[in-house]
Length: 218
Ligand code: O7M
Image (cartoon, rainbow, N blue to C red; front, side, top):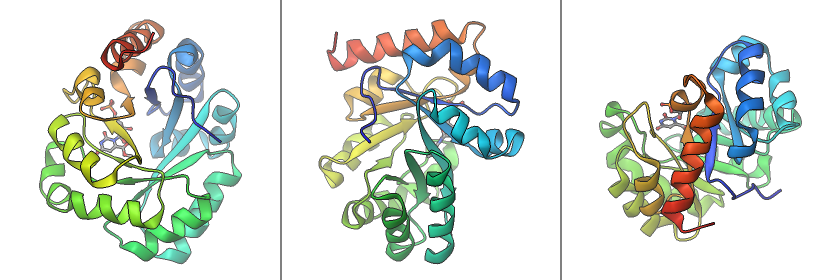
């Protein structure tokens, strides 16, 4: 299933209580293209939250899968059968582990290439081109690249060609949505700057407007 590409904003829904999740999602649903569900929400609410959220928007299940191929396959099957449209895995585990995720999701995998936080420079940055190339070779849908270092989005775009780039680090981590999109990201991922805002709906609309001016849409 094609993910919408209207607002270019993916909500990182890192809250732990179901009532907060529903409140935020109801406020932002018209201003985001997908919801990224990570461990805090799943551990707080149970995996049924994946199914519940998938009825509102496409869900990217961000379990940052990093295991051996047979276990990766089971994790991906568990996420997809609950309604996820895509999953996120790590690439440092090697091509067989990534291939297992690609197979089990029908190609709907984003591979983390370079992480957005300061520590991401330590081990992920030096390997990011190789991981991005692995992702392309494995038939992944795209990669994760840091909005905190837009120049790295541009570097990694050269490696992957037309694969998709989803880019976290906007807002709370200091990155700017417009910089990430102009550097070649397809979507920005935004968490605290939306769900932690006094008016999450207005905050999400602001990011969507910034994205549309940066990409020349609307
Ligand atoms: O906007 P924030 O900083 O509140 O949240 C950022 C989200 O993006 C949060 O859900 C992280 O798990 C995720 N993320 C990063 O912040 N940095 C990365 O390098 C990678 C991710 C991510 O989404 O990986 C798939």
